[in-house]
Image (tube, rainbow, N blue to C red):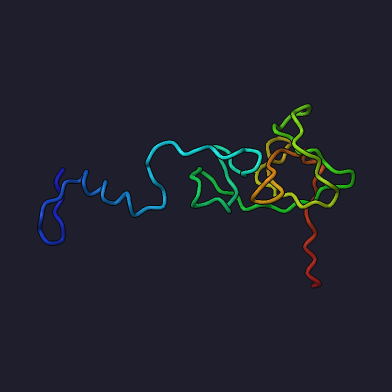
Length: 132
């Protein structure tokens, strides 16, 4: 396919597309290294909004703050009872909820992790009393 440039010169469409690759944020230079799933809030379908521009996924989620209920909560690698425990979240810890699957919340303590699943019954919304 041939296109005409603004000065009337012919340009090959392939050259035109190839020339525009260097202007974008993402490079198509081959597979990117996979980040650690226990420290980076990124799955194949969704990522923390703080990772937009660094990783490409179909959806970015704005974290919904939740507070860990009394007694604490295990942070697990998978959304199932008996899954490997990453750590135990302490009562009152702020958990950044990014997705809910059934009875499991997926999220992180911060953009740097840790990342995992918590049973939704062990989290409560953070009070946002602004004195009004």
